Length: 493
Image (tube, rainbow, N blue to C red; front, side):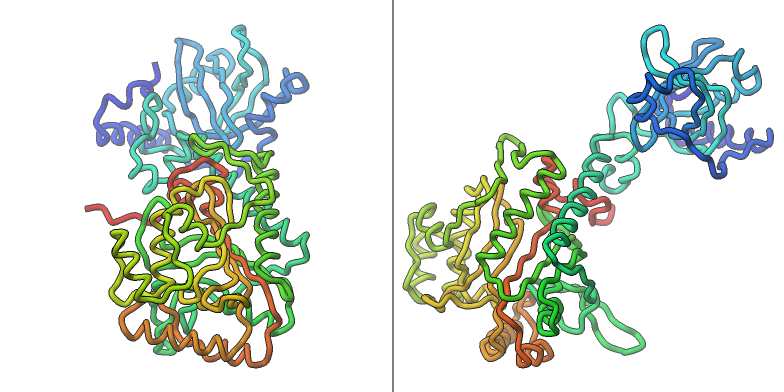
């Protein structure tokens, strides 16, 4: 039997010594263990799906050996490529004694290239009879035990390459992620939006309420910030005359790590001149429904125990009404002190100087968010927690802002953009006061953005969607780390 079938019974250092000895033997025999370019004619899945047309023809395939079984003068192996697996059938009378012996010394994890005949075994399995093979890469470390799989979450995230090798479902998640981004981009381009790129390194941290990462430019001798969001740059483009723009890219927030948060994440931001929050809500539900249809074939998706319908239209629920409905508390028409008293009466912990808006948000987070399973837009956020959104005409204490929720997660944020430079300057000043009093998440003063607004920005609607959370929803993934190829991890102790 092949040594690979019993590898897990030996200590790792012994296994690596055995494999290293095999590597040295290859060099002595003049075999290159790390091969050259190889032109494939088929992938595994192509052979299996088109067997009737390909039977008895020659193929050239390549991939990683995932299982290995020797039976005297014949051997079997499973070869995995990007499309799937196919069985290899190897006979000594076909390869010759020397080449067959080389094949029998291969290990699970080795990467080889094969030339052979496509056929079906007596047991009915579509296979490739190996006529010749070449080494492409000798594996010096064993793969995780195939019978138990790679279950250790820490290893799966830290050594994602192992996760991808042994867990085909994980590869499919990331293939789905790629399709999500493609579908999202195609939808926006078809709607007439222009894709743009804005700076990752910002002189001023802004565009969202979050704590930034700080870096330093040596030549200019100045601190810079990894961008929190591209919003302020994209709105400068509205001032410049681009009326429909979007950007897909990374954002960075120096915050905690959880199943829903990673310090580095991917988002899309969309801005449309002469639109408002209502237009952007319509765009959001149509975009998400389109992506779902393109990627999973339906607007009906399963997430855990929930059957979720993403088909538009999604209901709209004002934040105050949501709190009244789920918490049984009415916060409308009261001031900061009254709001803080209501929070205390309900046992909520809020800062001694918490504003009305902050209290309302705390009520919402505690009582409402856990109940938002089917897609819904929460609307009319307080102005204190929405420094870039336009005020509501009938209630200047609130803004024309919305957030889409599904399976209890906020997956986006949007609003009618504030284009009044005087109002925006005053809100920036209030943010600066918060920052000076110790709030590291507050906005900095962006004087150039104010200057841009003073030249005139058309009324506009804006939207941001977290792509990672959207992928989580469409792949039934419970942790953001499951949809980010290389998530951030704490250093090993």
